[in-house]
Image 1 (cartoon, rainbow, N blue to C red):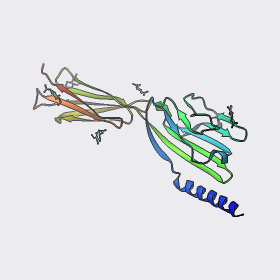
Image 2 (image 1 turned 90 degrees about the vertical axis):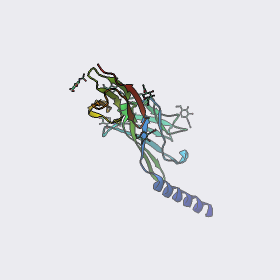
Image 3 (image 1 turned 60 degrees about the horizontal axis):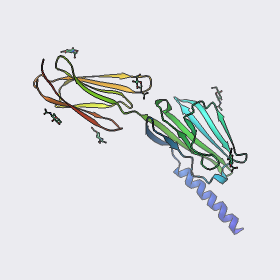
Image 4 (image 1 turned 180 degrees about the vertical axis):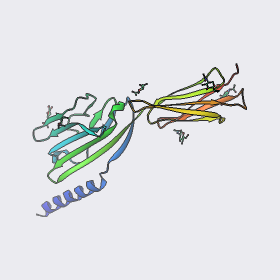
Length: 212
Ligand SMILES: *[C@@H]1O[C@H](CO)[C@@H](O)[C@H](O)[C@H]1NC(C)=O
Ligand SMILES: *[C@@H]1O[C@H](CO)[C@@H](O)[C@H](O)[C@H]1NC(C)=O
Ligand SMILES: *[C@@H]1O[C@H](CO)[C@@H](O)[C@H](O)[C@H]1NC(C)=O
Ligand SMILES: *[C@@H]1O[C@H](CO)[C@@H](O)[C@H](O)[C@H]1NC(C)=O
Ligand SMILES: *[C@@H]1O[C@H](CO)[C@@H](O)[C@H](O)[C@H]1NC(C)=O
Ligand SMILES: *[C@@H]1O[C@H](CO)[C@@H](O)[C@H](O)[C@H]1NC(C)=O
């Protein structure tokens, strides 16, 4: 009797702790790497059914489920071979994406059904793409710094500061190209540098401006 009480108390406590701790997590993952999402930390033996829901671009794209009593997996509309169970679901219920692509931006939720209730854990995934940075001098004495196809958009700054025009171009895959074109009327022969800051890492390039 005492033992039963203790077990149910523990279960209640576990349930409360998990409900308090569980929040949706935001994750930023570089493109072309591997991402792994974990389910709530519930003992696997107490889980009846686990379902991963994958919501890309605001609509349900696919589900993957595992039913423990039958040791059986099911999937609904999962056509992307890069989104799979990280391991054998009878041992580990994590989901993995390998490799991550820009199309994988979205919400990933693990839902576990247990005799003590349902548990959820969600991940908002943002895929990062480092921009390709170039610095060139154009014919008429202006310098052009370009941070191509970064996600999110990069920021460009110059040393020394010049008279600059910045253009942005948004691509269908969510990346943005930023191009800054500058001239330095007062310093026709100077050494200029362009700094590109981005969550995946900053980069700085220098150029000696020549005339003619
Ligand atoms: C579940 O099924 C897989 C094969 O589909 C098998 O390798 C594994 O041993 C089974 N696990 C259990 C706990 O029965
Ligand atoms: C699969 O996609 C169809 C059509 O979009 C939808 O009606 C159905 O509910 C989906 N099934 C699952 C299991 O997600
Ligand atoms: C040359 O400079 C003019 C403005 O002074 C600008 O409109 C034009 O785009 C520049 N050409 C090149 C190739 O940078
Ligand atoms: C995104 O699209 C742009 C323009 O088509 C392309 O240059 C870039 O390589 C793409 N990036 C990724 C990560 O798919
Ligand atoms: C231009 O600046 C860069 C970085 O500050 C430096 O490494 C380079 O030597 C400079 N070039 C000249 C010609 O001054
Ligand atoms: C990149 O630059 C930004 C501002 O320019 C700075 O806040 C950030 O700490 C830098 N990041 C790294 C990794 O150096």
